[in-house]
Image 1 (cartoon, rainbow, N blue to C red):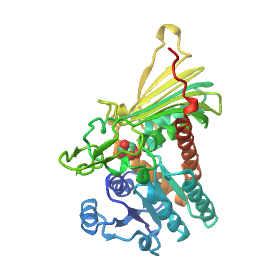
Image 2 (image 1 turned 30 degrees about the horizontal axis):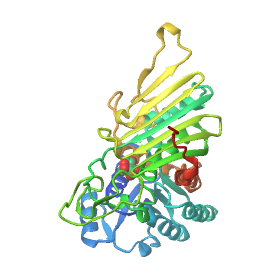
Image 3 (image 1 turned 90 degrees about the horizontal axis):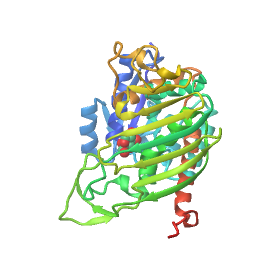
Length: 391
Ligand code: SOE
């Protein structure tokens, strides 16, 4: 029996739980070169970390990430903490020779992301791998869309239209969580969910974004500092103090792509009624694809080569063994869910560690997304690029 791959998960909230579930589930469905063992859960608060470890089935906890990431019995450091901690944890782990899977966005600034990518490049010379958690790449329907683009079914790509719409901040009295603090999160809707759109749009289209023109807005500028929240939304304590929201609530931008496509992007956590509508539509000279994560098992496909009387978008149920990832799961037609993307992600990570399969997206690719986010913020901050309507 080959030695297992031992993982330390740093952070135990929403993403920590999603990753813990994935490490545990992957070997039950995927044939992996080595078995993963999530052996250590790291969090600042001992009691809460222990409670999470008990729930997630992780045998050991630690409260100090610095000593955790250098432990000789750990092979992979899985970073599920807010963005302001990513660079320090990742760089310490890489220096100790650990493979690193880091949640998105890679960092809170381009400078941090550059430093992480440089550390990753150095560590790569010693066989150390890095990965960034752009989990939507692991959606079977989006992977199928990319396959269609690669096969030339869409022809020359003209439009890339991406929206990521959520509504968990619509209530102006939802509490001020870390995702609303620029120091901690880097940015708001832009980095939290717009980053997924940027990554998916570039990955599916096979083109990179060359330039942007942007608008960002904060609708609710202060929120209750305490209240009950499951990490997203929740009920603020209205009798207490309010604190400032320092990130964007919504970000919108247009983009030019390297292959000539025109892009339109929108990210918001105020689209009331849209719970997790991560959408991507691509129109080419020969066909189109359209995806919405709220119907994640489906891909809309328009084939311009169909006889005209039969033309129209068709719904492909991306649940068959011929589709990406799905042959590992349930018999035809039963479909997958949000948590399964993380299972695919760790299965890909484990495969890449022991084979020649590329580790994508690695820190270098995630740095590219960070540069796009930075360009969006710079554009939105430049008032001279905003043209008021003359009336
Ligand atoms: C919150 O907006 C969030 O959990 C993101 O942080 C995740 O990356 C996304 O997958 C779902 O929404």
